[in-house]
Length: 329
Image (tube, rainbow, N blue to C red):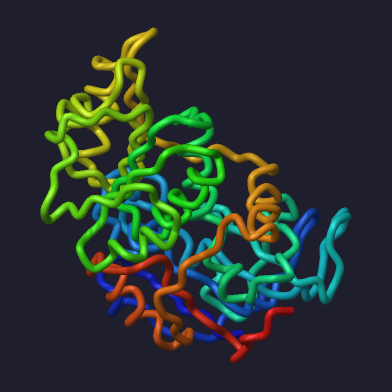
């Protein structure tokens, strides 16, 4: 089968299309013929390995796994022993483990508990754009942020993959949503349902005097003390992604600034929860959330897609298509 591999860390130029053996599903695993996959920040971090914590987990000198691609959608090709929920031909979507080869390939082998049946109202491309970004937004708002109906939430980085889902999920929870994005994305944030939209090139929410119950800072760039000014007395700050410096600052200073009965500061670490993907599937089928697709590429164009992602101007998600499949089912 064909796969886009990388044998060294670096720029998108290290990605190469190669012939590799097709994986065989083991016990509890499902072999998926990939129709579409999407680019995530996790792929960029694993490719460039410019964050120390990434190298500690992925291999210090060179990557242990050579195929990127956490999110995917496709059809079941074969199932391993003990698989109960899926059979060949089923349309599925899901997210691959950190510790296995990814979905930028013709086929991917995935544990059964990381899969869900694809929503019938979504194309393979839309489904592939959902899992990791959707789960990140869900756990950041609901689990770590504790967002409740009627609360005020600010979403910084509202136009990216996680941010576009976060705006829609927060509205579905019944929160009052303030989205922060660039000038060119203001109208898109409004269409997603944001009650208020701030253009960060013109307004600084940390000095406006308005305070929020929850701040979801996606690659946030303000110091924690600035976020503290924008939080209510018992507000919660949730950091999603960022540089080594930002992560360590949030971990170290966040613990010092957090109070048992007051403001809370933390860094989101995704926790395995088999109920999250079915929850998102339900929201998708009900039309309460919808993935935002910026552009689609073929597998051979993955280096171009990664370069575009690295420029930091993506609206929603970049999707990689295989086999020329654009069908919804």
